[in-house]
Amino acid sequence: MRPRLVLVSVAVAVLIVAATPSGALATREGPRRASRLPTLLTGGMDGRFAVRPASILTGAGATVYDFVGAYPGKGGRIRWTAWTTRKAQGVGTLWINDCIPSTADGTWRGHRATVSASRVRNRHFTRLTVRFRDDAEAKTWKGVLRRAEWAGERISIWTWTGRD
Image (tube, rainbow, N blue to C red; front, side, top):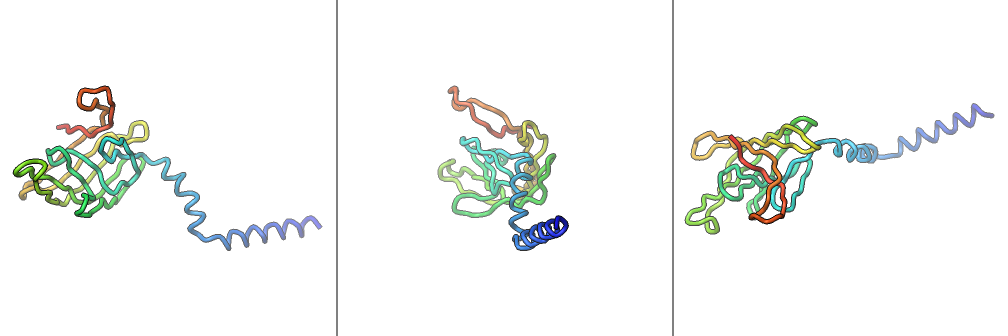
């Protein structure tokens, strides 16, 4: 009698696995795997970090606000080609404001760019490199993740700070 009960139990388990959509099992594992991956500061003052963000706010174009990926009203996104526990790489559009005649009235122009993130500390990427061409000249911007005070106040925010 016992062997028959074991056989029925195994048959029921096989039927349950066979009837489960393959995506359901992958979805259950997905968040666990994603939670182990380092995150990247998306920018802005909200301090949001994400795995494979569609856009990042940087200072790569040496203006106040530069976007890699989506820019409001212009579209775009970063297409991540690699995202591991040690590095991330992607391609997208770097939107740079020419600030002519002023920052508020400037024109945003898109430049093809590559994005690399590295040096993981406390589950966050702390180094960001953006490579792009501006006026046919190859340029590289490197940023470091830092905590900074905003406008001299005691408000602490995360930000990308340019480095040489």
